[in-house]
Length: 101
Image (cartoon, rainbow, N blue to C red; front, side, top):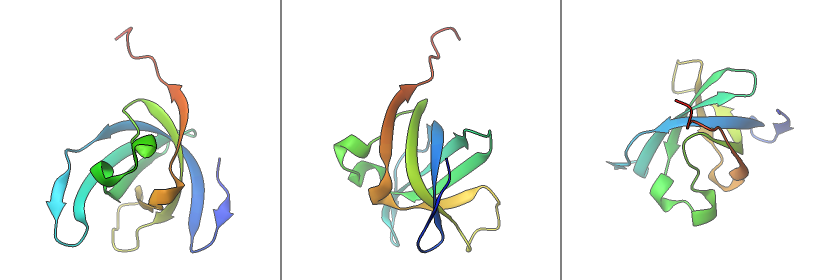
């Protein structure tokens, strides 16, 4: 799902694949990098995410579908890199079952 919102942000549904351990940052206080896939199978690199500073209801898990507003990172040449609007995170309540290995 993608829809245009102000300031170059679009809304996307993402499957969270993995996230790095939170790292202290002078610029962002603390950051986590997250890898995710769109419903169309496109890779997204989400950075910076202040994961441990997120409200509890916004702390998504691996293999969970979430919806959030994203914008291209002009400071990063990687096509998959996006910054997020932190307050836009919505956990959709759907998880991919990984129990079958």
